Length: 228
Image 1 (cartoon, rainbow, N blue to C red):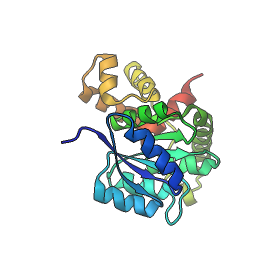
Image 2: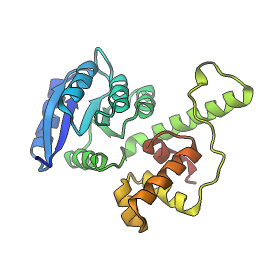
Image 3: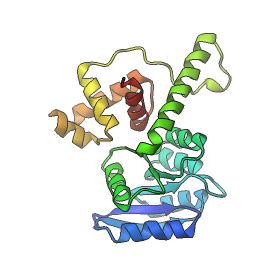
């Protein structure tokens, strides 16, 4: 069996798909298994082809990248790395909530693209430095709105908002959180901290619960918010 990372490209611009294909096909360890020009096709192809990672544009016809990411992530079809020009903050925060494992800019260097896909494939997360500030601002605003609505007793559309954290992290959990902020996978966290992968999984689950977030990427953003 092939040990290559199987990638599905989803972008409505043929030229961008061609460029991404050329980048990946000239780099050892990758295999482009398909291309989709809209989100609905991306979901269908993810089901049919079983890629490891989907490189997903956010603004596409029929079904946009945020909705497609949500469907793919919810069904466990593949990991998703969003490909964006970050001109709409709502798209960025939306795809984060939808379950994306990372964000890349379309201006990223080929080496950055391949490194990001490898990291996500290995169970880590990736946030383009240029996007971090916007995502952190959106994350903070969302949590602030959640806290305000909770304290005022408002429900409405805030039923799914995450509560503010109520429990302090232990020293070890803080270490794990810092590793999540670096985008490390469980295996790499275990090696760095000298603990078992099973123990890492337990710590990660506790960190997510204590921070009131649902994903490793949200935890990474929370870590940036907590850093002075």
